[in-house]
Length: 215
Image: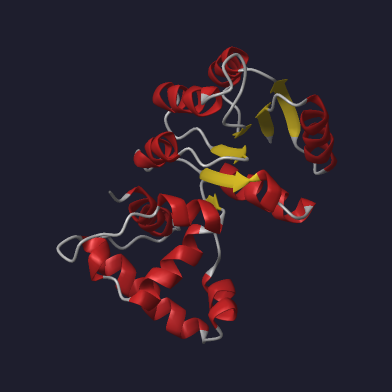
């Protein structure tokens, strides 16, 4: 699995390269600035990109801008944002097209290698991996006449945990209820969000994107 990595701090970038390689990822490119990231994403078209938000030359939003541009030209390109900051405007735009894997982790809340590697693999396979703090900042409360406003508090809680990338079994364990109860909640969520029946995990991703991209 080919990875393009963008991180301006040498020690962190080198550490991420070594960690990913230890788990059999191929580092197709490891760059430290926005322009090089843009070139790498468009020429290599990796299986997944791991991107910091703030990169040289201006240390504002080069990483997210490069990811957005790449997804416009390579629809569905999986992107995992790894940052100290939540850039709400551009993060919301990144989530808006509803195609391909998306993740957003905060650096100081990644506590072990397994957590990080699981997130990279999940995003590469088309899923989501969202830090709960990112979710809380991106979530916009909906009025009652909009689909998200029809969700019960428990359904919102289930959807929030889905946004983190958790399975029904993991959600059931977290909420101390049966997996059958969670399956019922997810069915209600799909129904209220008017998501068609599907044999794959696409509805979970679409539900999460609706949840995070509401405004």
